[in-house]
Length: 82
Image (tube, rainbow, N blue to C red; front, side, top):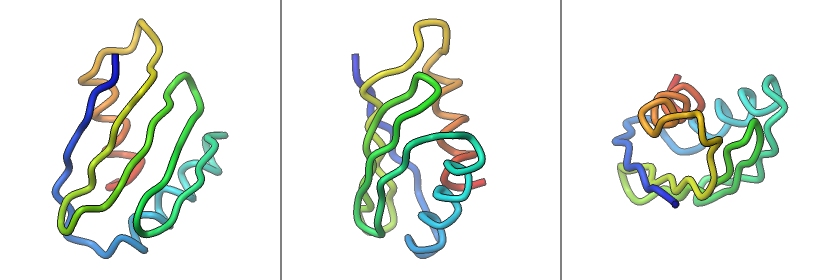
C-alpha cells in the first residue's frame, strides 16, 4: 500500500536534491532526480517525489514490512531535509 507525505520546504529544490543525491550515494540508494521530480529505490524503500511550490510531495510505493510508516517519514526527512 502506497503512502504520500507532504513536507514543507524553505530551501531551493536544487539544494535539497543535491543533499538527497549525496545521501543516496553514501547509502547505496538508486536516485534519479532533478529539481522538479525524481525516483528513489534502495534498502527496501521505493518511491517518487515532486516539488509543488513550497511542498515536497513524496509517494512511497514500497517499504519493508517491519518498518513503520512513522519510521519511513523520519527517513525521508533525513534524506531530503537533513
